[in-house]
Image (cartoon, rainbow, N blue to C red; front, side, top):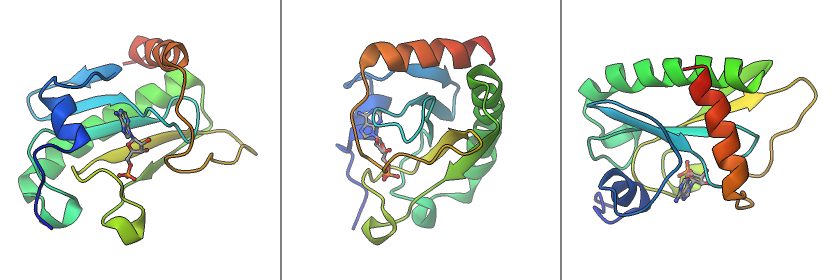
Length: 138
Ligand code: AMP
């Protein structure tokens, strides 16, 4: 498989599709996951095109994980989470559904199970309310 420049995240990066944006710099973009596995589920993308971790230029990982750390702290503080799960899927067999490298930041609370991956579409007002909490902690 080769990188499809019309995948959903490439379109979001080009501004052709909307997202509930949290943070952007020269190398990365962070926004709310539209089918969250928990309240406050965030995605972080490098702007550089690659399908997954496996074909990425290693130069993307420094800026990418700097943003992942920054957002993970803001998600934990803003959402009042007990912990943070970070996940990243490579290939359909691993559960990847969008083929532009991205990292999931998922807040966790003691005793609360994760919802299904790519399960239910969240209400836009809920996404925006959670985004406001996270951005207040950025
Ligand atoms: P993955 O299975 O790691 O490729 O995850 C793709 C993630 O992107 C899933 O968690 C989806 O809920 C999420 N997603 C799909 N489309 C959109 C979109 N338009 N905006 C925000 N998140 C999305």
